[in-house]
Image 1 (cartoon, rainbow, N blue to C red):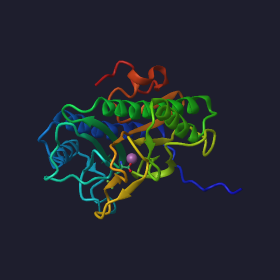
Image 2: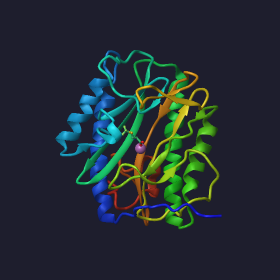
Image 3: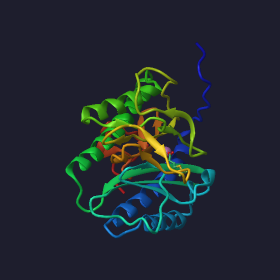
Image 4: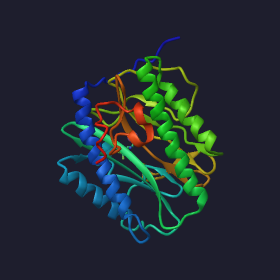
Length: 282
Ligand code: MF3
Ligand code: CO
């Protein structure tokens, strides 16, 4: 059996500090967009907020121009799963759920993260689905941290932890064909990180790895289609979808969730590296 040759870029602690700076720009953009989400707001309005936040920080939107992508964010509403292009005519309505994905590059280093939020009042099942996706994201990050610190972790331990958390949360479709990825001096690097699978396979989890983890789940079938715009991914059955993402880096003593202001401390406690100051809450 031949092993797949992967080109995994390992980062020094100093390079991870620079990725942290990029991650905080993304976190700031996401926080500002989250605060603006309300019925009547358009996805183009959110895109403008992100563009301004990133520019004011001296960074550059990484999605814009990526294989010709025309915007700063992906704003995927309801049955849209990922990669939906913001539009002035796409106005949020009470009861929608919106996934906002944003990336920025600062001094050559990338950050990439996404959240899903309700618009106004939504069905409780949808709030629950958002929570399950978030829990799965944090379970994947925790698995990565444990694997790096023990020295015995492998890449698909993350995939397994994500899948397990989703299945523990309920009957959801786990989207195939899209997943997480290495991140660093490019937005997308090796390795690809599936959101499902058996543990103990793939490259070892080692300090210096930086990965974006991004569970995508649906209320119905996992099947998706890409629309004629060449970007928007929708559920084939029209069911609602959720997408959340963080960029994180592995250090010898734990993980650093680069796109979370507290570095992951409130969710992960001691699994977070001491490089993230314990009293830093930003
Ligand atoms: N965050 C997305 C990902 O991780 C990137 C969006 S694709 C783009 O794959 F084209 F919009 F950049
Ligand atoms: Co990503």
